[in-house]
Length: 125
Image (cartoon, rainbow, N blue to C red; front, side):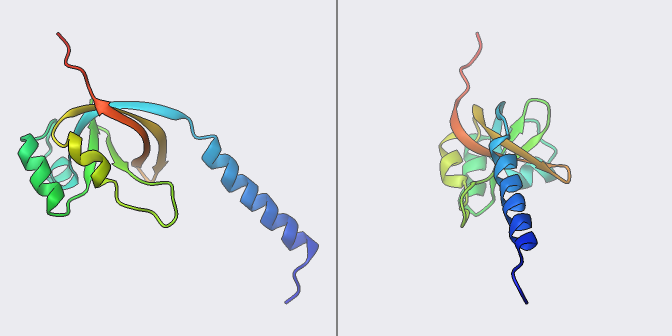
């Protein structure tokens, strides 16, 4: 099979579109609780049962997620290939309310965030 100029142009255009879509993704700030994904879905929680519960589930292998104030669940992901789990980044905040910023991706009703910065949310007085 010959590699034609048309195929080369198509390949370059496709690669450019992929690069542009990743760089065009805006940085978003999300506020919410860090809890394990199983409780977020199966228990219908609006906040974690306890800090220790979130830590225990994460240590047992459940992926930690951010449950935003509006009920949206954000799956933390890496933007590297090969990818890596994000629990080590979230574990210090398990069970706590956080402010996270990063690039948000959406697909099929799910939302994921590549966390650029995360910190405990200051308690409001």
